[in-house]
Length: 485
Image (cartoon, rainbow, N blue to C red):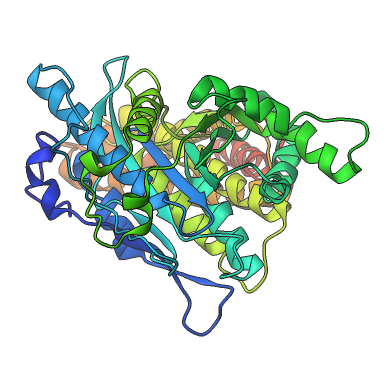
């Protein structure tokens, strides 16, 4: 997928060449761990054409053999059809009698089919309601909390799926059981900790969608979104007679997600669910299932509903999303589950790395502008400019709210100081080069710089040196906002 000649237009024409890629695979020697594939991730998110596109990641998690991969193929069909309609100015027509669902591998029966975490081999480019083009990525996960996987592995899969996605579908069968809510406890604790430190960002997760398949009480709660919301409200309602831990999850879950939805789906029909001969032909599905899954898919994935991935209040691009995959792979790559604090610090690491990158860019932009003249400037003046734009960089960094441990922030701030020092050396070399190439008369053009060989005058040296020490002190101080010159 995503060869150099790839075009983000008319993806429907080559979808038959695209296949899922495995991002996280079970570790061969440790049943509690995963291996992360950088190459697989790069094949999906690494193409230059989408690097700066906002990314929408839709993931499905839940128990095994309950139709997660099957459901994602409806999403694939809708997204490819939607793109074709948008790019050709035609009406959206999808899921007809002639449609054959393809894409993520699935099969009927009792044996596990998906292991690890998989991603569709290319983002599907969709024009959102605001006219902006989003890269929509679908993610499939192995069955969790089903007795076929260790608790740690199940929690890792579910955690990665939820933390990486902008919309997490929780695929369940028949009813929402108590343990289905308990499986959210890690996220509830992480969300509580995040909100206590950075409440200005709002809930740490975006959308959680319960999809209850084979729902049997349609006489009490109707199929679809409306009946689903009524059913969900009845399930997660907190009552005084419940044990404290059950009330805690219920009371906190709404604060962790920006939106929580529920859809109730009927049984797809025995031919689709139980026979290996079923090849994905839509005409073989129960009409009521086909109609309900069609309405649900359009409701969740239409251009008005798509939401790009957000972390700490910032929209994430494909390039930045790859960094989150790597960091979460590191955090969840150990032999034990990470503490919520470790997850928060992983977010803080990426958050402040972005702050440092933006600060460095501001510094370089200012220095480039100040040093654009072909004439060599006095070294004293170069230091003054460096201090000025170093302060600008500090102020950019300081605009990012404090999250996670202070140690993470201080370490990245110190690294920013080192990088700006290296940049100063580069500008000094460029300035020195102008002595030879840009000056007709070095003595005239260089001013105080003629003293470089023997050092600056004592007054100038003291002034610049004092200011430079002030800048250094400011760089390693996490609380500094501005340094007066």
